[in-house]
Image (cartoon, rainbow, N blue to C red; front, side):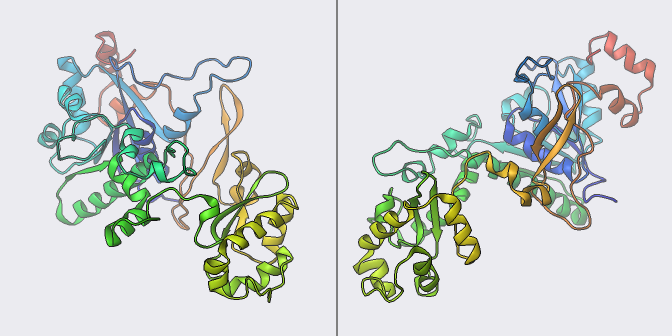
Length: 403
């Protein structure tokens, strides 16, 4: 079975989780992703170390974001290494990087230099704050980008410190993969390459798109984009949280209270015709606070597993807020390959995140585990650039590539 990106060759020059994740998505769907490790780059992800007693040395981050990739190592600061790098650039369709522009220029991998070698290349880069403006060359640090969106202070309960979710980095990874594929589709028609930039700042803004778009449309207000106490939600049955008897939280998403009230009130033991709550206005305005306290008291009577069963049986738009360990036991996670098992050569059977994108005819696959640094240098030079074995050995002896 073929995969969607089988004919694509990508050069990966990334340091950060979000950059490596972006090219991983391309590799999962068939792209030949060649990860470039520079011999002088101390930030390169180290190869797996022998396990300690607890197995804590397993580099689980690298094993995820570099799966399905090949790895080559060379000295890009030497004349021969630079020439070899240009040969490699001439063979790739796209470059994915999260390096800053001055770093890329120093080794001849900035967009202008790459275009001189491969004019139709698609050059995808994750930046901190975009390709233009006074902060265009600040480093890509997601927490700093998230801090500028204005969303961190509204996430916690009032009076609590701002909350950094880390979600913007993931948004940027997916957006860059989408941008690269879109640019490649454009190239197929026009034969033109282009530069693609996705900033952490922009990705974080789109992570908060619902709230920011509301602000752009209606401006500031007393409740808009301000932290709201869970006891001050405008609708007790939507966007509200209640603790259950075992301390786990119930979340409700039923904004149309007229639709849900009969089954919901019955499940909670409240008469559907209770005169305090028998209209939408009473539930969400006149007696809103009274309903919140009523629901809080009733949810605390029974544990979370009872409430999940009730929600499921009545097909209600509500659920229990889970801990990190929950997805590993959820059968739908296995059914959809969101978590997969790996046979790791050093650590045995381990679990890893799988494939969040389903495609019926050209699905993502795990072809290889994350490589050791430089593992495929000789192979890439041989089958992609046509170097003979003796030439590869000579380059290794001269220190141009890792031995």
